[in-house]
Amino acid sequence: MQTTVIRYGSAGEPVSLSGQVQAQNQANLAFRIGGRLVDRRVSVGDAVSPGQLVARIESQDAKNASSSAEADLASAQSDTRSGAQQRGPLSSLVSRDVIPRQQYEDAQRQLAAAQSRLLRHGFRANGARQTSGTPTCMRMSPVT
Image 1 (cartoon, rainbow, N blue to C red):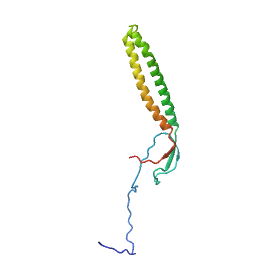
Image 2: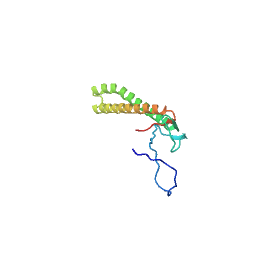
Image 3: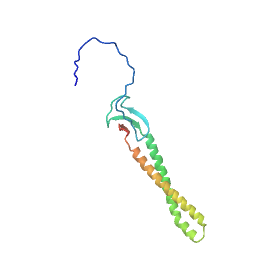
Image 4: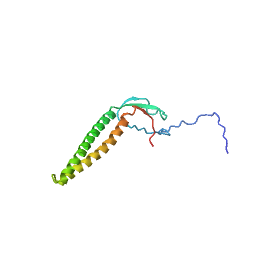
């Protein structure tokens, strides 16, 4: 072990260095909804801590997406209901050879497609409901 005593002395030659100063730790921020930034509480370089309010975002985009998803869901529900109601009568008609089997099979495919749309739009509407209910206050959340 070596010990050095520090003393005042004459200053040496001035040293000029160039370089870049960077933060040791950085966090990327991500938000669940898009929209117009209406209030920014921090600036570039400010220290922030978990849970701290950093911004408020206008959530009209999320509300519009939710309305659109609900309309698509209602349409898919109507198509599925209509297809299901036609299944019984068409089945009876095809069994009595009143209509061609192809017409019945086309109706079955349309019903299956409507049920698939119903499922897809149901998931989309559920996600949009959750997002549109999100407060517009955005808090810091590190992305990993």
